[in-house]
Amino acid sequence: MNVEQARFNMVEQQIRTWEVLDQDVLDLLYVVRREEFVPETYRALAFSDLEIPLLENSSPDERMMQPKLEARILQELAVRKTENVLEVGTGSGYLTALLAARAHHVHSVEINPRLKAFAEGNLKRAGIENVATELGDAAQGWRPNTPYDIIVLTGSTPVLPSTFASQLRPGGRLFAVVGDPPVMEAQLLTCLPGGSCPAINLFETCLAPLKNALQPARFEF
Image (tube, rainbow, N blue to C red; front, side):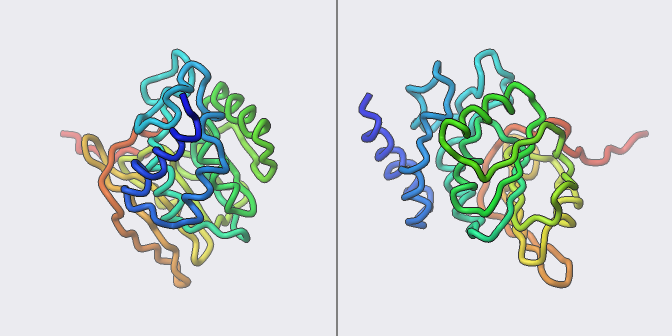
């Protein structure tokens, strides 16, 4: 496989055509080498428009997001070098690395110890130092280091917990995929000075849920 041609095709045929037009984001996809965050078994698929298993024998819910979704998240959040990020779900560490390239610091929380170790190894090999990974359950918020400028949920949630909005600074942004399959909404929330955090729907998608994601209230008879 010609790796650089495959990377070019990913950027030009998958990502640019999915309304990712921020040149800084597109350029970053050539710098942060996605194939180095993919398990060796699946490395040939690194640039494919697929959700790739994070580990051999991993759960069906444990997949890398499609490259176009990772790039779109980065574009929509417009992360700045002065900003601190909370990432819920470290996964392979690839989106973590993209965020770290644009942010001051990334706090990434992963519930699966095997994935945490996998991501830490990937980030270390890539020479990325402005990331702190922690083992824990942040599906309904993460109090340490609050408030954050940016919060990113890398798995879906049927209901978005209000705790996340309360952990943002004024002007802070939150990306989340909200709803149930087969169709969910990717949302961007922006925290206003008065404390409200209005959401806009960006696009429809479908993403595996976070473990222990908040569920809607059920009526009991």
